[in-house]
Image 1 (cartoon, rainbow, N blue to C red):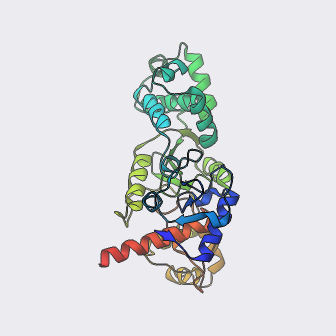
Image 2 (image 1 turned 90 degrees about the vertical axis):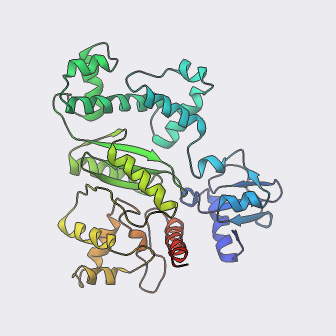
Image 3 (image 1 turned 180 degrees about the vertical axis):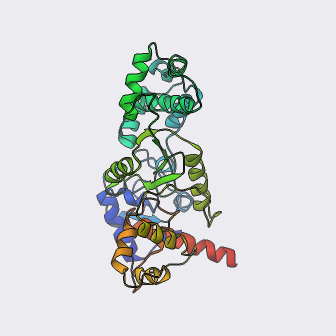
Length: 353
């Protein structure tokens, strides 16, 4: 849909000038002088305000005759990883016990340099480091299944037990024989930009947009509270989270069945459960939430626990607004919060209709 509200358009134009990543997928801007449409983080030269139109979805921009920008690639980067990254990751998943070389990538017309740059930008690690973590993740599962460290080491492509032990301890912080708990971290894409999901063997412990403020602090806190090390990889809980969040964005899910592993105080868990009890498509405020959990005088503590929530959308802190109806702070950004509330309201109307 084309957006014509002047205040909304002014906010989005400023987000375009600021290259604000929290607006990724929230709006699409059509540039009349070039005929292309972009997302908020586009690095191209910024057009004048009078030369742009704003759309709430990609299809509307395409229907209006705009073509995807070659700089920011909105059809790839707003909702999904580029094809060459999907191909590289699929190659790793299909060959978890061997190292994928630059030569193997080039044989498939995949540029190793582009893959390396993308992983550094989006994961903060090289593609080779990602592969090492994936191999150690597989080794960890096999060790838990009862295989010996020697068998696992040589089956995973290591030429010596000492080399395997060094890599394993460097990545997990413990020797293979110690069996320290690990947290799997997986990145996936959504219409509002990419998200990280972290999960232990017990359940999901973090679900956040990758540009969330203080995300590094959350990672550190999780490792300390769970006495665990974060490794790139997947388990049943990360896969289920990606599936259920995809269903949510498609308007096909209103409740989540995910197992959660939430380190926190008894009071924080009480507040988080209270948040989960706020119905889909509705909003509330801190005072009301405090009363719902029988803590009417603990409004500030409820607000603090809400801010400590690490599992976005599933524990729906986006449904908390000001008592006067204003949009209060949200770790993923106010623009995303507004989008999520409107998304739920829209699908509630569709259900009623």
